[in-house]
Length: 178
Ligand SMILES: [Cu+2]
Image (cartoon, rainbow, N blue to C red; front, side, top):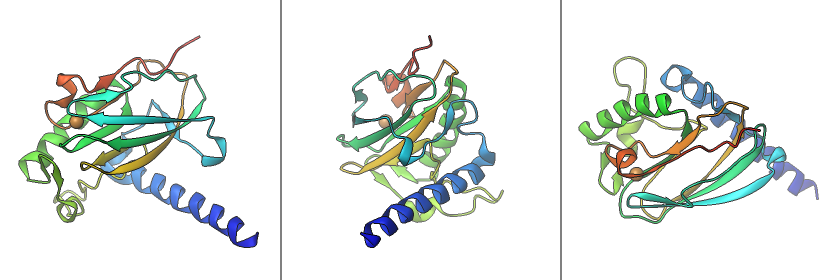
Protein backbone atom coordinates (compact mmCIF):
# COMPACT_ATOMS: atom_id res chain seq x y z
CA UNK A 1 0.00 0.00 0.00
CA UNK A 2 2.80 2.37 0.91
CA UNK A 3 4.69 1.34 -2.18
CA UNK A 4 1.83 2.29 -4.49
CA UNK A 5 1.51 5.67 -2.78
CA UNK A 6 5.18 6.31 -3.40
CA UNK A 7 4.75 5.43 -7.04
CA UNK A 8 2.03 8.07 -7.44
CA UNK A 9 4.23 10.72 -5.85
CA UNK A 10 7.06 9.74 -8.19
CA UNK A 11 4.93 10.22 -11.27
CA UNK A 12 3.72 13.62 -10.09
CA UNK A 13 7.29 14.76 -9.44
CA UNK A 14 8.60 13.68 -12.82
CA UNK A 15 5.70 15.43 -14.54
CA UNK A 16 6.29 18.73 -12.79
CA UNK A 17 10.00 18.48 -13.57
CA UNK A 18 9.09 18.06 -17.24
CA UNK A 19 6.82 21.08 -17.10
CA UNK A 20 9.58 23.16 -15.58
CA UNK A 21 12.08 22.14 -18.25
CA UNK A 22 9.51 22.95 -20.91
CA UNK A 23 9.04 26.44 -19.60
CA UNK A 24 12.75 27.12 -19.93
CA UNK A 25 13.09 25.81 -23.46
CA UNK A 26 12.79 28.38 -26.19
CA UNK A 27 12.18 31.24 -23.79
CA UNK A 28 8.93 29.74 -22.56
CA UNK A 29 6.78 31.05 -25.39
CA UNK A 30 5.17 27.67 -25.98
CA UNK A 31 1.88 27.20 -24.19
CA UNK A 32 1.64 30.85 -23.21
CA UNK A 33 -2.01 31.30 -24.12
CA UNK A 34 -3.26 27.81 -24.82
CA UNK A 35 -3.54 26.57 -21.25
CA UNK A 36 -1.07 24.98 -18.90
CA UNK A 37 0.41 21.57 -18.08
CA UNK A 38 -2.32 19.50 -16.46
CA UNK A 39 -2.19 17.59 -13.20
CA UNK A 40 -2.71 13.84 -13.48
CA UNK A 41 -5.06 14.02 -10.47
CA UNK A 42 -7.33 16.41 -12.42
CA UNK A 43 -7.59 14.38 -15.63
CA UNK A 44 -11.26 14.41 -16.66
CA UNK A 45 -10.87 12.04 -19.61
CA UNK A 46 -8.37 10.28 -21.80
CA UNK A 47 -8.30 10.75 -25.57
CA UNK A 48 -6.21 8.52 -27.84
CA UNK A 49 -4.79 10.31 -30.88
CA UNK A 50 -3.15 8.36 -33.70
CA UNK A 51 -0.69 10.08 -35.99
CA UNK A 52 -0.48 8.87 -39.58
CA UNK A 53 1.26 10.20 -42.76
CA UNK A 54 -0.05 12.99 -42.71
CA UNK A 55 -3.23 13.13 -40.68
CA UNK A 56 -4.58 12.57 -37.18
CA UNK A 57 -7.25 10.16 -36.02
CA UNK A 58 -9.48 11.64 -34.72
CA UNK A 59 -9.15 14.80 -36.78
CA UNK A 60 -10.88 16.85 -34.15
CA UNK A 61 -11.26 16.80 -30.37
CA UNK A 62 -13.63 19.07 -28.52
CA UNK A 63 -12.67 20.10 -25.01
CA UNK A 64 -14.26 22.41 -22.47
CA UNK A 65 -12.51 25.48 -21.07
CA UNK A 66 -10.73 24.48 -17.85
CA UNK A 67 -10.85 20.78 -18.67
CA UNK A 68 -7.76 18.64 -18.09
CA UNK A 69 -7.31 15.99 -20.78
CA UNK A 70 -4.82 13.16 -20.99
CA UNK A 71 -3.86 12.61 -24.64
CA UNK A 72 -2.32 9.23 -25.42
CA UNK A 73 -0.45 9.98 -28.64
CA UNK A 74 0.65 7.13 -30.90
CA UNK A 75 2.72 7.47 -34.06
CA UNK A 76 1.27 4.90 -36.48
CA UNK A 77 2.96 6.43 -39.54
CA UNK A 78 6.34 5.94 -41.21
CA UNK A 79 7.53 9.50 -40.57
CA UNK A 80 8.43 11.51 -37.49
CA UNK A 81 5.33 13.38 -36.29
CA UNK A 82 4.47 15.88 -33.64
CA UNK A 83 1.42 16.47 -31.47
CA UNK A 84 1.59 20.07 -30.30
CA UNK A 85 -1.18 22.05 -28.57
CA UNK A 86 -1.07 25.76 -29.32
CA UNK A 87 -2.42 28.76 -31.15
CA UNK A 88 -1.92 29.10 -34.92
CA UNK A 89 0.75 31.74 -34.33
CA UNK A 90 2.60 29.45 -31.92
CA UNK A 91 2.56 26.72 -34.55
CA UNK A 92 3.82 29.14 -37.18
CA UNK A 93 6.78 30.10 -34.97
CA UNK A 94 7.46 26.48 -34.15
CA UNK A 95 7.50 25.49 -37.81
CA UNK A 96 10.56 27.71 -38.28
CA UNK A 97 12.34 25.84 -35.47
CA UNK A 98 11.35 22.52 -36.99
CA UNK A 99 12.68 23.61 -40.38
CA UNK A 100 16.01 24.23 -38.67
CA UNK A 101 15.86 20.75 -37.14
CA UNK A 102 15.45 19.24 -40.60
CA UNK A 103 18.29 21.36 -41.98
CA UNK A 104 20.55 20.18 -39.16
CA UNK A 105 19.63 16.55 -39.77
CA UNK A 106 17.85 16.19 -36.41
CA UNK A 107 14.71 14.98 -38.18
CA UNK A 108 15.43 12.53 -41.00
CA UNK A 109 12.16 11.16 -42.37
CA UNK A 110 11.33 8.44 -39.87
CA UNK A 111 14.24 9.06 -37.48
CA UNK A 112 15.13 11.52 -34.73
CA UNK A 113 18.71 12.26 -33.77
CA UNK A 114 18.17 12.59 -30.00
CA UNK A 115 21.86 13.25 -29.29
CA UNK A 116 21.81 16.28 -31.53
CA UNK A 117 18.59 17.51 -29.92
CA UNK A 118 20.39 18.07 -26.61
CA UNK A 119 23.21 20.09 -28.17
CA UNK A 120 23.51 23.78 -27.40
CA UNK A 121 22.62 25.72 -30.53
CA UNK A 122 25.08 28.44 -29.54
CA UNK A 123 22.44 30.69 -28.01
CA UNK A 124 21.79 28.64 -24.90
CA UNK A 125 18.85 26.91 -26.57
CA UNK A 126 18.54 23.27 -27.54
CA UNK A 127 16.26 21.43 -29.95
CA UNK A 128 15.24 19.09 -27.13
CA UNK A 129 11.48 19.28 -27.47
CA UNK A 130 10.50 18.38 -23.95
CA UNK A 131 7.77 21.02 -23.78
CA UNK A 132 4.75 19.88 -21.78
CA UNK A 133 2.37 20.87 -24.60
CA UNK A 134 3.97 18.66 -27.22
CA UNK A 135 5.52 15.32 -28.10
CA UNK A 136 7.71 14.53 -31.09
CA UNK A 137 7.64 10.83 -31.93
CA UNK A 138 9.35 8.36 -34.21
CA UNK A 139 7.23 5.68 -35.91
CA UNK A 140 5.90 3.19 -33.38
CA UNK A 141 6.48 5.46 -30.38
CA UNK A 142 3.77 6.50 -27.95
CA UNK A 143 3.69 9.22 -25.29
CA UNK A 144 1.21 11.13 -23.16
CA UNK A 145 0.40 14.81 -22.94
CA UNK A 146 -1.67 15.99 -19.96
CA UNK A 147 -3.00 19.46 -20.68
CA UNK A 148 -5.35 21.84 -18.88
CA UNK A 149 -7.14 24.05 -21.38
CA UNK A 150 -7.83 27.71 -20.76
CA UNK A 151 -10.96 29.56 -21.82
CA UNK A 152 -9.24 31.00 -24.88
CA UNK A 153 -10.40 29.85 -28.26
CA UNK A 154 -8.32 29.44 -31.40
CA UNK A 155 -6.36 26.46 -30.08
CA UNK A 156 -5.42 23.58 -32.31
CA UNK A 157 -3.24 20.54 -32.17
CA UNK A 158 -0.78 20.31 -34.99
CA UNK A 159 2.35 18.70 -36.39
CA UNK A 160 5.03 21.24 -37.22
CA UNK A 161 7.38 18.92 -39.09
CA UNK A 162 7.94 20.89 -42.34
CA UNK A 163 5.07 20.42 -44.78
CA UNK A 164 2.88 18.34 -42.45
CA UNK A 165 0.75 21.19 -41.09
CA UNK A 166 0.02 22.30 -44.63
CA UNK A 167 -0.72 18.71 -45.66
CA UNK A 168 -3.50 18.51 -43.11
CA UNK A 169 -1.92 17.73 -39.75
CA UNK A 170 -3.82 20.37 -37.83
CA UNK A 171 -7.09 20.34 -36.02
CA UNK A 172 -9.14 23.31 -34.98
CA UNK A 173 -10.97 24.49 -33.11
CA UNK A 174 -10.03 22.35 -30.16
CA UNK A 175 -12.06 24.27 -27.63
CA UNK A 176 -15.80 24.66 -27.79
CA UNK A 177 -16.50 28.07 -26.31
CA UNK A 178 -19.78 28.51 -24.48
CU1 LIG B 1 3.71 15.15 -39.07
